[in-house]
Length: 334
Ligand SMILES: Nc1ncnc2c1ncn2[C@@H]1O[C@H](COP(=O)(O)OP(=O)(O)OP(=O)(O)O)[C@@H](O)[C@H]1O
Ligand SMILES: [Mg+2]
Image (cartoon, rainbow, N blue to C red; front, side, top):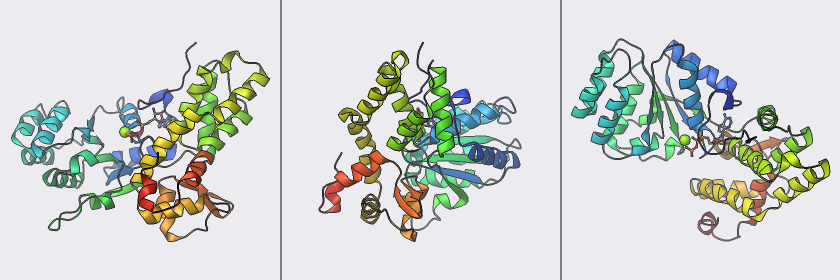
């Protein structure tokens, strides 16, 4: 029997866990034709999966969701051509989008504006698009059309995007929605369901052990779950299982793999935020204050008895192991 954990590709349908309230509110917003949303979150937190899940849920209701991956980057012209192609099959556009896209972003916007069909556009990796001024303007306009909804995924906090002095920031027509960690219940549901599907359900103690290691970060939970089964969990006796988990928690290569992700996150934070994180990892955590709201929204800090601490034990260990010294040097440590 193969294990049921998915580790890497976006998940949807029966493989999509948690985030019920978030998905419901996005669907509500879409059906009501309300404002567009910008989903922001750390790499691997699950942004693309949310977009895929929305397509999946919407498909039987109305087949109008168009998924577009902004990872292509590049010029406005390239964006127009690619987006035109992606939109061409959408109802109400009568195969005119590809042709409009060949002519550029403006004709494409005009087409969207004149279409009476409400069209759902799911844009992933919007960071790859908005570096170009004209493309950023297009995203802003498309999101403002009222009856079209753009849900865009971004790793970078938009406040860190360069703004063009003569233009309003592209993101200020979006409702900002952070994608954070799973709650304990969501993490338990994922671990219990997927281990059961893999042929041997984790005990509550094992679920707690894994959550202590990596917190409610779905990708890391999936990663550990997969690893446990790869190491023969299904065929172990109870005491062998205990040893297996202990070995996992101290595995050098695994901790190194997580460190690479942690290092990547720090690269996108400023020195003040990094200093706060380091402080939060020391003994007693930190008391709440304004500067940490973003860190909390991003799921890097969690509350514990009125104090704020790193979201997991391994992240705390990573922060404590950072060399003391100028913050710039700390960032490059992996
Ligand atoms: N809702 C979820 N349920 C179960 N697993 C999830 C969920 N969301 C994310 N994952 C896990 O995280 C992995 C990465 O998810 P996804 O590609 O959606 O993240 P992302 O934020 O788009 O990443 P990136 O920043 O690299 O684009 C998945 O392969 C899966 O292991
Ligand atoms: Mg993604």
